[in-house]
Length: 280
Image 1 (cartoon, helix red, strand yellow):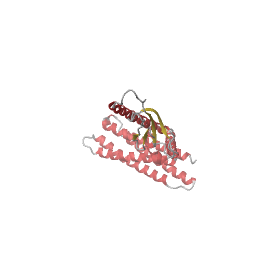
Image 2: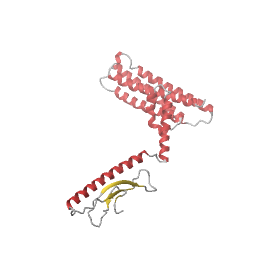
Image 3: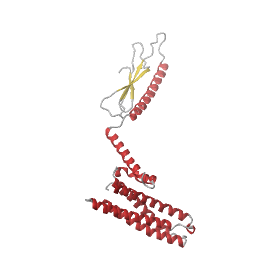
Image 4: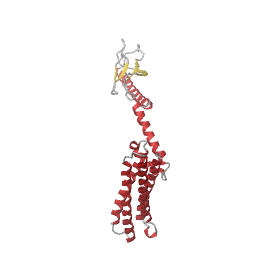
């Protein structure tokens, strides 16, 4: 185009001067901006656009001033650059507002469905906020499976119980603890150890295949019993730090972590019960 500014795929542009017979300076005025639609391009691609330029009115009373021509040309180039930037920004904004590709839209819809399934399931637990926050990060794995939801809840509880037990064992060996605190700490470590074993056993049992309703009911009954026992152990551990003689930072830190494990276990048990109800 003899009077257009051509914009390439990489964002560069070139001005091709429009020359009149009596006026040869490449001075232009931007008159309009129009994108050129290019077929077979993705929504996010910026391909080509053109800016229509027109020469100034021909002057007959005086000779062209080279300095003025140079200044005007620079101004035109600057305005052209601004127009390019504006066009790129508007194209990008328009593209972002367009609908996603079919595969991306399907993935987004699935992710929303998965998280909503977790949110709805967690609303029936005693600690729904903790339930959702601890499980939403596993939405891709869980999808909309009640079994995977219950199993993942047990996995999260197991990891928390193991890390807390290790931390308490280390803390029990710290110098400066009162005898009562040290003894309660060791008792709690033992109870958490039992809880870890019961939760791990429950996870293994849930993973097994069951071919008949009777086998399923037997399995789910065992899991409910073990998880309930784990919750009892955790509550006993927390109760060991009750009383004025256990006041202080140690009590606050330990009870806070134990209570979180107990809440996770309670939520897991509720999700196991919901899974069992689907097979009644």
